[in-house]
Image (cartoon, helix red, strand yellow):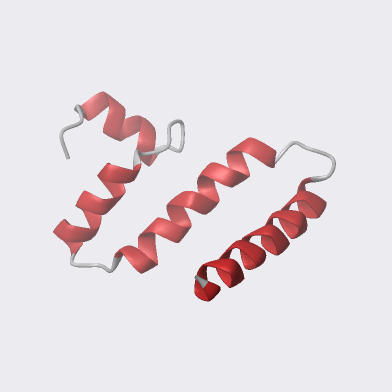
Length: 77
């Protein structure tokens, strides 16, 4: 994965989040679909940003609506 042992240890302990390319590489090694691991990786990133925010759930609902609008617009193009 082109990361050193101390960094891997921090990722395993939850002290650091793996980079997207590391997750993709793990998918290849473990023969797991990116569709399985990448959403989990992205969810961890979002959680780390908003977990201590008072309006975290409200924010997630707003983002969900925005993403649905973006996806709807993409299908129209």
